[in-house]
Image 1 (cartoon, rainbow, N blue to C red):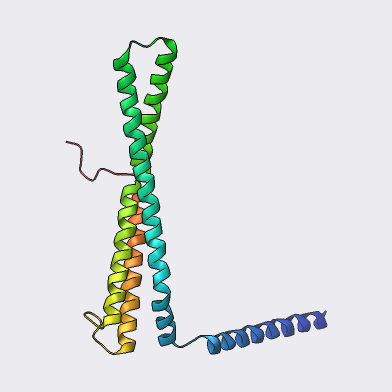
Image 2 (cartoon, rainbow, N blue to C red):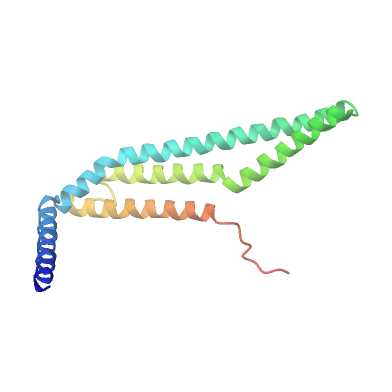
Length: 180
């Protein structure tokens, strides 16, 4: 019995030592902060492109839904004005009216226009800071390492604001005012 306990303790010790060696090796493989910040700056064009692509995507969704809504609303009015529809015509009016209602509800729920605006605004702000860093203009008039720290902090703040705005869009609208 004592041998089994000793083997278990030895195995646990070896496991703990292996974990310590892994942590030390990882620490040695981690590049210095300044290198990571410079790499972060170099990766930003792809982040800006991703934000702009998302903005374009949501703008297209918004425009497509708006045009679908316009055309179907006009079709309901046109069919109704054209003639007093017999049974198949009434079915078409009901179907078109249903689609108009569905598109309107989806546009209000998904809010593609707001998402497109938020993504574009974040991309523009990040790009503005990247250009200011490249040109060494305010707020990036310090030495190189301090500029990279300020830049990374600012960009991460912008990205956090973007995530917060996305979360707010996902939340149901709640009336902040009391009932009168």
